[in-house]
Image (cartoon, rainbow, N blue to C red; front, side, top):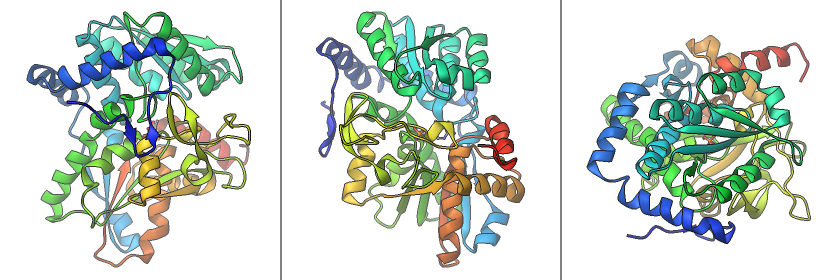
Length: 391
Ligand SMILES: *Cc1c(COP(=O)(O)O)cnc(C)c1O
């Protein structure tokens, strides 16, 4: 079997020649080791007894009443580590272990993906090095401490703007040097082929469970699914099992930041196609093709690119992409906390905010599912700071 290396014109493998062998080795492991029943049995056991799958699909009675339609939340906030990222980190780490790798590397901006990688490395007995910009290390002290406690090394990146995109370059450089014993654990549906397919298939458990749960609860498919988009992995995870169901409308919600005419993180709504992180997709760039730094109140959506499969669905219009501002996300954070007693991640709050916008326009039998990608404990300080009026 061969995998498509492209999504329409997007995707591909824009990497140094020396990495092609590693990417082919990973693709081969994905095709041959991953489907193996023994591997799947072990993986499923980690997902259920360690990570806590399956996650619930919660009927939100108060929010439904308020918006005038039926609203469910898919509760990835209840996964171990507090977000969906662990589905991917555990899957890739286990695959790397079966490939005979001894070491995981990752790059991280806010530290959430670094933490998920540190967790997977600790439980599977793999060495972990996380590349992180110096500026981000200073901003995200708590996540740096969490990674260190779980035995991961955090390596400061001092080049360029000392943030996520520089950490990405550093991780790729390290991988070139140590490809034999090292797996590069990419945290979203971006990067060179086969990562966009691999990460999607590791996250589609969210959508597979959702499908089964909504059919059992309501006897039919949802009308609308909403998810936030940073790189696009939680969204692709919940969307993908419904892609062929024409009756299901899907909305991907990007970080509108201070507005699409100001600083934002909305690559699909406010960017153009180009090459970043080994693949061709929409990204934030200036007229010279240099990457523009993104901005979002939520660290997890603060990424200047987006997965190539989303780029394809944007052009084909299968999925509608939209953006929510920092202020709207903040209001949705407080709204869900107050209305349902669930404190959402600021990332997920973008999806909640969009539901609040369209809910009142829908018919009262509309059935809406929002992917709650993570919990908001990590964001409480940020929210307090914004509420006090300091950004
Ligand atoms: C990282 C993160 C995101 C954004 O990443 P995607 O790949 O777009 O899913 C969204 N929500 C939470 C809680 C995150 O930690």
